[in-house]
Length: 88
Image (cartoon, rainbow, N blue to C red; front, side, top):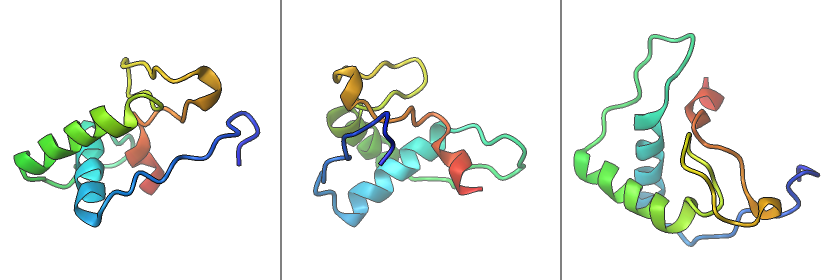
């Protein structure tokens, strides 16, 4: 654990399709510096499902660019704006 963030992410009980939808949603927002690789194309319905799950289950603890997290600061997770860059 990161000493600055002593809380673990809770188990949200997402199934594989929900996790894939959130991943597609985050990838669609990402700017991947230093690569010509575009985020994978995703079905618009899957992106909307990902956005809805994000709004309901993730946004309170994680920032996404200019959208602030609302959880107490000691319970906030990292900003996920650049999450796609972690996979390069």
